[in-house]
Image 1 (tube, rainbow, N blue to C red):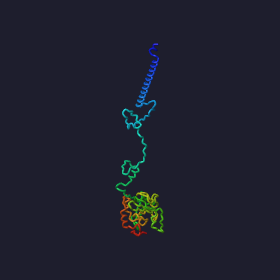
Image 2 (cartoon, rainbow, N blue to C red):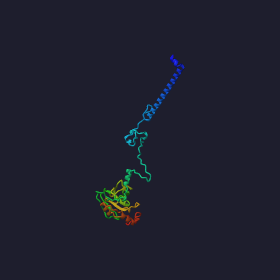
Image 3 (tube, rainbow, N blue to C red):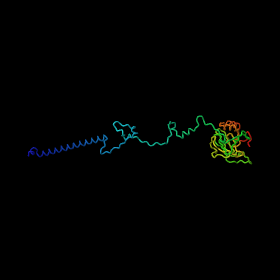
Image 4 (cartoon, rainbow, N blue to C red):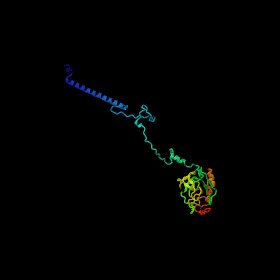
Amino acid sequence: MVASAEFPSGKLALKNESVHQITRRLTSSVAARLIVGLAFVTVQACASGAPTASSPTPTVHTVGATNAAAFPAAPGTNPAVAPIAALPTVLPKQSTTVTPAPSGAETSTAASPSTVASTAAQPDAAGPRATRYAFPIAAPASASYSRTHHDYPAADVFARCGSAVVAIVDGTIDQVNLTDRWTKDVNDPTTRGGLYVSISGDDGVRYYTAHLQSVEPTAVVGARVEAGDLVARVGKSGDTSACHVHLGISPICATGEWWVRRGVIWPARYLDAWRKGVPNSPSPEIDAWSAAHPAACASPGAMPWPSR
């Protein structure tokens, strides 16, 4: 055969083997290039952010209208999407407890209503308000009073039994008697006033009202009263037979004496002023009397008239 003559059998086999090797090398080269190409495509896809079949779809965190302005979009990015790291941190709800500022530190915290209220009740730079006075018998009851008195200075204020007796002055109740212990046979001077209420005024003067029919439940020792507050009712308890209130004006004594408490100055001119709404204070006259009789509170013998 011609073929046999041109391509001996040994050389033909060698040629066939060479062709096979060349084909295998070409196949391997093409496969390698295909793998490299696929890998390059995959890397490009990952770099561009495009999802691949082997990776999960990323969660998208959108920025609401309120937060969008706080996080402006970078050039070339979607303004509706913010990186996770750029999302705002949600702060816990603040406590309503106010931490006191360090000493000397300035603060803009507004005062609480209670603090504001407590501050408005304080006296202003002009000092505390002036002591107020009231006529002892409340309107519309009619009343009359004596300008003189037996044995010692005082005043009897006459009004219908049951008429309202009010605090003459701003002050504090210092003595109250709720039981009528007076008897004619004994005639103990400590019981002659029957039911009574005594007030230590803010002006430093004591105001004693006696022969009462009843005392208000709120009129107790230590209670604060203001001029015009109801404290009792007109009566005729103690050493009397007529409805009236005995008024004694005196210095405030630390002891439980009766000889000073029943009165040391004449009340008529003060009653005249209080009835007209004029706040005439007996304080200067009482101060002068106390200076002239410094031992009066301690002993009835120091009084300028007999104590019996």
